[in-house]
Image (cartoon, rainbow, N blue to C red; front, side):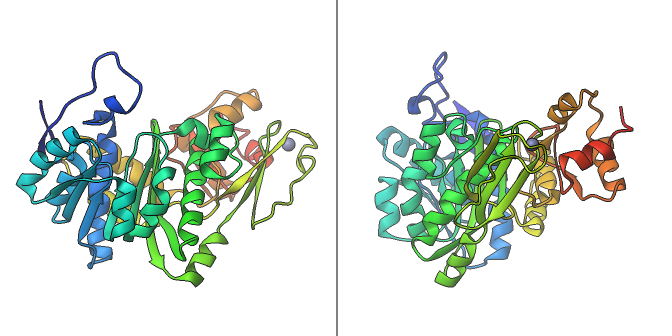
Length: 371
Ligand SMILES: [Zn+2]
């Protein structure tokens, strides 16, 4: 069958009925990822203005080639690589009208041999088996998807430890924990090659985390990126959390807020901004109405651009349950925090997610008159 996304028409093979597992169903075309691809195109448009020398684009796990075809339609010199011969044949047919090329190559081999200005790593599961080659073979912008959200957020603890070489913790801000585990692991992998990786746009949507890292081959800058890593200490009883930058954590024995001994420490994770606000606003402006997920993409990107840079978010419903109080509208809740003098913003991780520099106790007081 044929599908059209963002003005690009490609031939695809959809997911087989009743099958939910494994790569076979992800190989050719995943409509769930249309939002991801729409945002990718908007990022590619905004990035062309930010870095005019960026011309070549590689989708290292191309499948149907739809993402590479959309990059080619934007004027990038696009390459679609895949190990599967059916995928390469299909991607080649889909790229031909837009001037791109399909290669039957292993992503790691290809990325260790040469450079591409923009590299997209969109595997089924964890991107970490490709991370070293990806940072080696990317000149400017590395775009990474991870769909293994349970390991990333600490729900599957041991596999999270193995893949991301960190301590992930299962908290009520699990989408952000996952994103920060992912960015932290990629930043460290880049630093091992004397490259600085800085996230300029990121989001977590449904079943995946996605980040766009700008790379700079500079050892001093790479060291500076490591200073943005650190630890979060989270109290499972009162929900207060603190964070500290650095390579060695000073783990509290008890919660400094309530005295509970149920304190979880996560890290090292990325504690810095997950997006460049100005760039992300430009990305939102590059979303066009020919995109199938235009409305969601714009709204999400505007929320990401306006989010506070605190390393964890709160969930209003979780807090209100804790306080045995009915939840109220998010706009009203965030406004009450601001009126009380705190910084506060919505957060894109869920409809009830928000960020604030207030402590849980301060938020409780500031919103006591609501509801
Ligand atoms: Zn506590």
